Image (cartoon, rainbow, N blue to C red; front, side, top):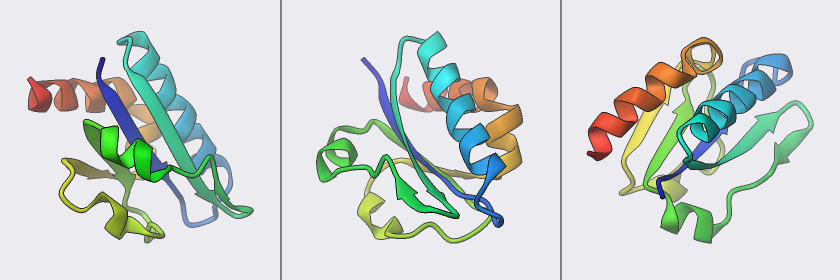
Length: 103
């Protein structure tokens, strides 16, 4: 099973952070992929990715609208940096591209 992880964050740290997480999780579920999303919002880091999550991940998605805390954890992993609005509006298309990359 494909396992992807993501970190979502937006400049205001409120709605889009969580909308993006939900969109990515939903798109992954439609493909029978496992997905865990860490949010870095106005109330801090939630659902923090563990070292085990990172180690077993096939692919990492990071939003690029603001800096992601602890981004160095993903060194050496295939990674895509996407806009927060793309994560919200185009999650299925983003996962299509990841599927092609992993094939």
